[in-house]
Length: 285
Image (cartoon, rainbow, N blue to C red; front, side, top):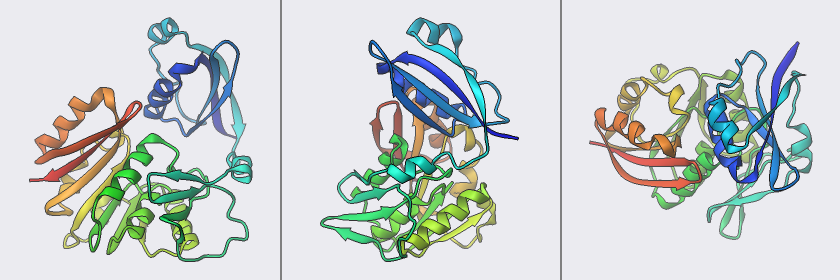
């Protein structure tokens, strides 16, 4: 039984970020990009096998030069295995070096200092977040500029656990992360062990938190479509004056998305952007 469908596109190279941003919002799991001729690239977009056909605006994208080259179905497999075998560590911000490679033979250990950087081992798996995507980079780089010493941090939609682990490295007193995807939680727990960092991860929703458990900072790196209706629940877990670092927001929707937060009692402190993605630092009034 097929585990993935791969949709193949040909497009001008300068539209790569714009297309991947839109396909992320439509449920893509990941991408592979290959150079083609005359300033074009071929992009393979991976979706779950049961995923409906991505509903791109055909006229708009055709006018921009997008060609759909069809799709194929793949057996369920670890399609990141070959990537892990050859992946090289890369730097994010001023404080982190991320190693997405195969952890075979690596001993669990405290996060290793590399000069002024900390090494985080985050093997590329199906859980989102190795630090390569702009939305994750925005949060990692912003965390460096916040004083997390002694704070209680909530990671909403923990994915690979990378943001939780970074928060611990940067001085957070306690980090709790959760995800409705139980497989992601298993991956995050494995990454915590691999890096020798103490965190609390659980599978489920925000309502599973003890009502008396309050946080100083919430990390929400998740597509808004998967977060609608959750702001009131999140608000109940925060101390007065707490902050939210929200990423995964398409910059083209910033006005609409910020209005959702404002209506729930949050105010915008600052905003950062990389390519098509925006991140908001918000305060609870």
